[in-house]
Length: 468
Ligand code: UTP
Image 1 (cartoon, rainbow, N blue to C red):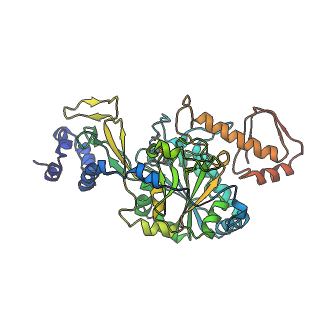
Image 2 (spheres, rainbow, N blue to C red):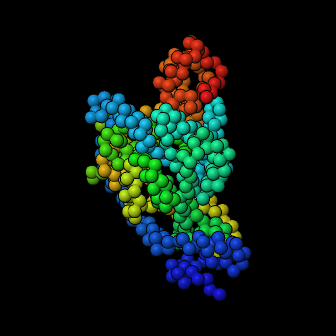
Image 3 (spheres, protein in one colour):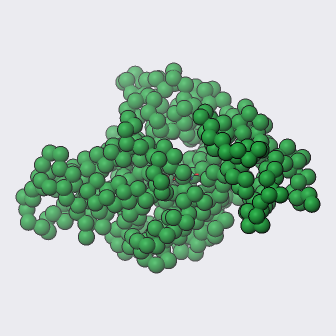
C-alpha cells in the first residue's frame, strides 16, 4: 500500500526517504511518520532555492558604521550613569520582574564532549559543571534581591533527556521548586548540499539538527512559557548561553540600562582586540542595529580604523542579551522575524542502498536561526560594552585548540576571582587557582564583605574554592 505522504513527498522530489519504509518495524515506522508529518516541504524547497540569495554581507558591511553604544570609557558622561543603571536594575530584580533564559540545546560538536555541554566539568578548582556555575548565579541573585527569578532552560532533542535527568539528580542546583522550567527547541532537517534532497540519519530517521539558538523564540512561545513568564510578572529576560561561564546572568547594571533606555533588546559587547576575532560584529546598517558574523566580514572592512587607531568595527557580540517580554510576545508571531542561516556541515547519512556513509568533507546544508537577528526589529535597541576579562570566557573548542577552550576559560575565571580577592585585601600567591561560587560572592564588592567578616590579611597559597 502506498504511504499516505508519498504523493506530497514525490511532488517535492523527496520520496527517497521512504526507500527503507517497507522493511521497518511498526515502531520505527511510527517514528519516521511523526518526523514526516511535521516537515514543512514548501519551506525547505524555498530555503534550498534561496541558498544563493543570501544577503550580500560584503555590501552590507561596507555600509556599516559603529553602533551607538554605552561604552566603558564614556559611561559616566553618558545619559545614563552606571549608578543609575544599577539602581534601576536592582529595582526590577527586587520587584520580581526579571526572568533568566539559558540556552543549552547546541550539539557542541567542536568541544567533542559526549554529553550536553552544560554537563562539562569546568570549575577550575571545584570541577563544577557549566550548568551549576550559571544556575548558581540565578539562585544567588534571587537571594540577594529577595524575589524569585524564574529560569527557563532551553534544550533540544539532542540534549533534552540527559539534561533533565542531570538537573533533577542535582536538585536543580538550589533553584526553588517550580522556578526552573525546561523547554525543548525544534529541529530542522539537513539536506544534501548538491541536490537539496533530505538526508536520512538512519533508515527510520531523517537527519535532524536543532534549529539554532534563534529557535528559542518559537520554542518559548509554543511551550507556553512566555505566558508562564507573563503570569509571574516577568517584564524582562536576561539571556545567556551555556558556553560562557563568565556571562553576567541578571546583571543589575545591564538590566538597568535596558530599562532606563526603554530598549526592547539590549546586547552586551566587548571591544575586539583583533580585527578578525571570531565573534559576531555589532554594527549599524541603514539605521538598524545588526550583527555581521566574522566569516561574513570582508577583510578591508574588518581592518578599518578611526583616526585614533581604534577599530571601526569594534563591538564583538558575546551573546548576552536583555529582552522585553512584550517584545518577544509581539515578535514570536511574526513569521519572517528570524531568517534561516545556511551552513555546510559534514553530516553522516544512510544512502538509498541502506549503506551508512561518513563524509570526509561538508556534504549537507543545515538550517539555523540566530537569536541576535531580533536586533533590527527591536525599538530603541541598545549596545552596552563590558570588559572581556569580566564577562566573556567562551568554551567552544576542545583543549589543544588555540582559543576558546576549557583551559582558556578556566584561566579567565581564575584571573577574575584572583583580582576580586586581591582587591579585597587578600594575598593570592602567583599561580594559585582560586574559584568563587556565586552563592559565596556574586561580585567583587561581596568578596570584600565576606573577607571583612573573616580574619584579615588572608594569604591563599593552595587551590581554594570559596563556597557556602
Ligand atoms: P554554538 O553555535 O556555538 O554551537 O552555540 P554549540 O552547540 O555550542 O557548538 P558547535 O558549533 O556544535 O561546536 C552557542 C550557544 O547556543 C546554544 C548552544 O547550546 C550554546 O549555548 N544553541 C546553539 C542552542 O541552544 N541551540 C542551537 O540549535 C544551537
